[in-house]
Image (cartoon, rainbow, N blue to C red; front, side, top):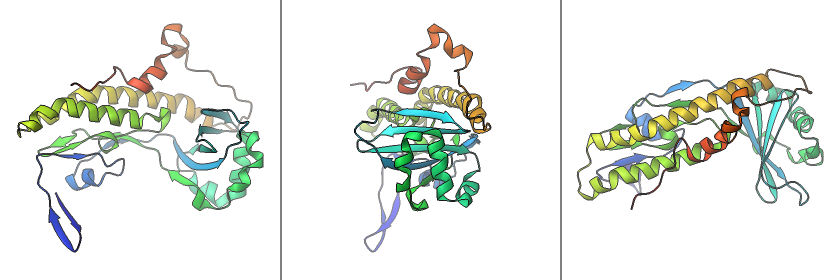
Length: 257
């Protein structure tokens, strides 16, 4: 690996470089990997508002007026995801910050005394939601893991879970070969083999949620719209499936010692 710093170019030689540099992976780009993607029907605006002591603790979500709001408890602040239709950011921005405040209050009226803290668009981060994965995560001397190998939708907040699981499997598969100074291409292929099915399953699950729930809400302006989970998830035997799938995947991963 070559890098520039301290007055010039430098070189570091290693048996393996692990690309764990996220959804905008520079290593993925430099190595010429092409991701196969989908186009989820939504984007997300992220921002923070004050949280009062009497507010509920933990996370919560609201649906209404054709919008979805997710709120994450960050102590004295709410970290808020305001879900918007795909490609709708410029229209929302053109309407102005006051229109955004009104939209937030329309879904979460309790925030009416706090939305004035949003004064400028610099306080709001725009996330263009996508979901994709590269067909092959590796090449000689390089392995991609986490969002560098498979960009996850924010649905369920699973990205960090699955990235850590990738790292655990990579450690389990590669540690002995690294100790022997004998990393082979089939070692890297084994990491992908063990992780690809769980990634495909969770991305398929996210796609169902996006299409069956999010898309319907975002395409509706009915403020009284009610929501019921898909019928198959209401079966008692499957009721806990979404939470387990988000937390553990199709099977828990443990470090082998």
